[in-house]
Length: 344
Image (cartoon, rainbow, N blue to C red; front, side, top):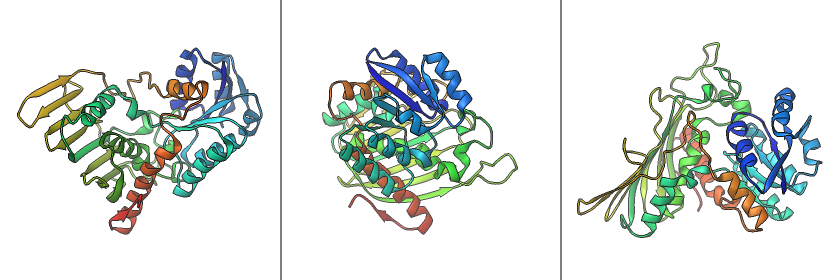
């Protein structure tokens, strides 16, 4: 049995990591840490684990692998410390808050000879995997253009400490807003689906509506509007938002030389293939996860499998770097008002 620990006992740890570890027959939860020690102690009772009062104490224990679900600004520091302590690491997205830190995490994993996996779970959604299969089989020909969106009402109801002063809105702890929280998912997904790497980005990031409890604007972006150009020639748009105060939009549409593929875009079908000839095929694979409807992500099982079977993680740190470069490129593009080249 692989002994695992959780660093950061917030909402994502509580609704995804801990239940999925508990359901996996090849691992056991033995260690928990949170800046709120009482929260860690309560969960330790639930999972028959030990609550530690520091990250250092947890890493000094006999855990073999850890999930890092802490605030964005601490990802790199804790990941590198865990790898150097001889632990395998599953780090939540965004990978880190600077490109230098992201690259340092990858380097630390190589140096330690340990696995580093990033929680880009959208690759594992059923309709996305089916779409990848269809695209690779040539169902829509060469991908030419695309549009993707990840838009909901914001993290203030999702956070373990809900409300307008959630850490997601605070640049000191989150560093980045909707672009990193939601945009990194769809950036990674676009590269996964198309098999192409983003090389140019033009973006506008803004605070359109979100405010702290005192009425002042939040200090990170609540909306981002992005144009991506891929190394294979495809171009398209990505919209991410924390101000969609209606139904969540998590759709992706890709147009190719032989047809169009619509993913989580139809009210009744999770995947729709419309061929150039007009023939339409429907695939009812699954429903996308939402904040209000959490289902097993598959990320934890893949992380445990790569440790148990001694193979590279399905979503390696290296594979996440190209998406992170695009995210940082989008932020730079918005700040400077220009097109930014990435992954060159």
